[in-house]
Image (tube, rainbow, N blue to C red; front, side, top):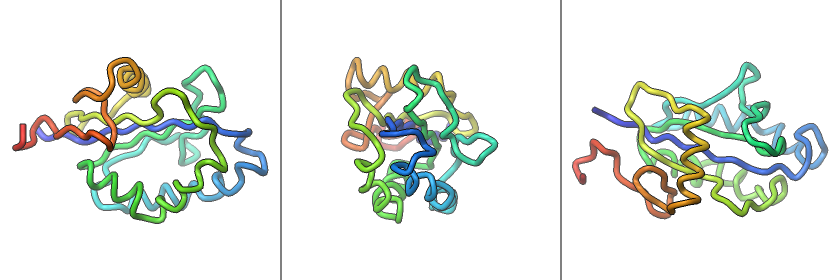
Length: 152
């Protein structure tokens, strides 16, 4: 059965999203999200009716925002994240977000045709925090092949 790469990344905003500090970030969201959707290998992204997920409050700290998506493979996500305009946007993250002491990114494989839930994604971050990188939760530093990969 084919698999897709699920990813969650969270960030701790320095200020409310409506503040001047966050303005460049929030003003660029629609463009960055459209870029993701047009990128090779993109499958799906979590979003609310407003077109993004910044209104979702799934963590105790209301300043934590969530981004979750599906990709065909690690290289597609990596190309989008670091080699597209998103990479320049990502390079500015310290302007908008506080450093986090626990994992803020987790990757894992799910069967194609299924969608990750926020609860599952949060559990993957927790698993990464507790056990380090495994096939169940990993990062770009130590990617695991898809279960259906010929390398397994």
